[in-house]
Image (spheres, helix red, strand yellow):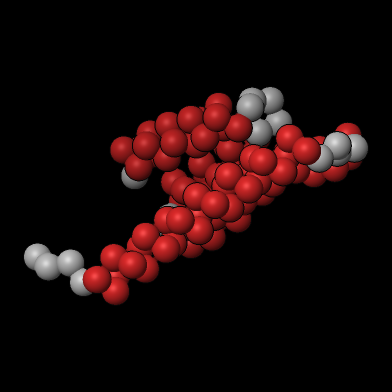
Amino acid sequence: MSLDPINLAAFLGMALVTYLTRIAGLALVGRLDLSPRAQAAFDAIPPAVLIAVIAPSALATGWPERVAALVCGLAAMRLPLLGVVAVGVATVVALRMVA
């Protein structure tokens, strides 16, 4: 297997840009004085991105994924994000074993 220098440069460039955007975000957050409303909006971004990634897959596949998405929606009213993800994964695994 050979390593193409152009591909290596592209991978390293993408890694550098990703790293710099994350570091820039962390550096800026410490300097911003956000209102409670703006802070709530920023706190809502990770769950919104997670739903945007998962929903098409859940709705385009079989019934176990649809049921798990519904269970996750209900669990999200009571549990933190990590708990919702754990409940969703456990539900999909259990339902796929049944199906």
